[in-house]
Image 1 (cartoon, rainbow, N blue to C red):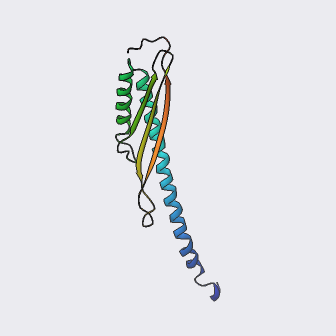
Image 2 (cartoon, rainbow, N blue to C red):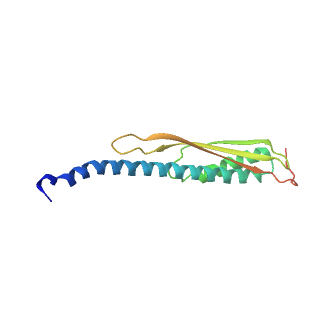
Image 3 (cartoon, one colour):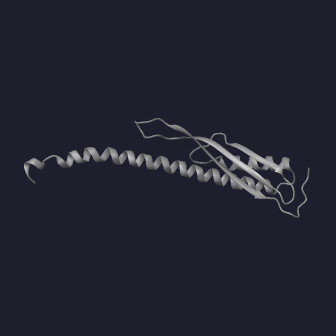
Length: 137
């Protein structure tokens, strides 16, 4: 190593380290959002399963909401109050039921650079109602 090259490694480290840390923070934030989407999708799926097996449209709405709330109760990142919309307009044998779950959750930002930001994640699930089934009013 010659005298002219002295200090170049530390200069490179000073430039590369913040870039690497910013990339790592963005990667972790993106992972949190993907995890949230997966959890919301699973909650919508279990909610529509509960709704499709209910005997009446009113029971379908109650069952779907209770199932989604139970599914998201201990989710990480936290979903404070999910909005659950249950579509029972075609709740007849051979019809279908729809559950839409939407949630606004706080996703941590890059430390010391940004603050936490709210991200809305939603998922929709549809399930058929059995053809040879008795459905109440």
